[in-house]
Length: 150
Image 1 (tube, rainbow, N blue to C red):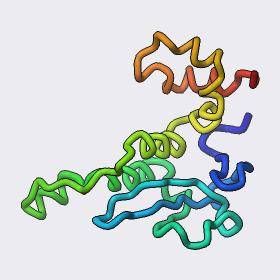
Image 2 (cartoon, rainbow, N blue to C red):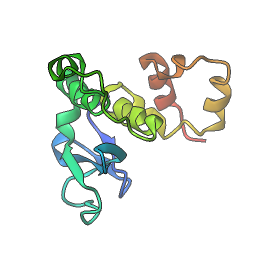
Image 3 (cartoon, helix red, strand yellow):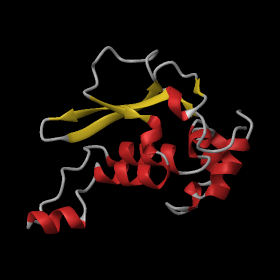
Image 4 (cartoon, one colour):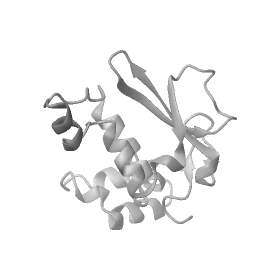
């Protein structure tokens, strides 16, 4: 298994993106600037023919600065709202779980490797009585990622 947060599975071709510089994150911004339908793809080879209105290098979403960029899709932030003199928030993605999945893929160690095994019956059984945090801890994600496929 590769080190976490160094490879990703392309949402178009299903093959590994072996380094951040080879990947792109694409999404659609609906009217009103509402981001949705996020995908991680191979830059150049797996473009979806311009059907996605927004894109950015995968590397832009990694690390602390990447977290800041991802969170800015959810909220303008306290500084911006104070400057604007308004508490009006940014429109949130219609499918928050989809956004959280993208965030975890880019920021949470072993999530990308484990997510392909979430539907395994053994994983479902083992985590049936866990809370909403436990399955997403680094320790549990690594254990899921290391499981053999059924």
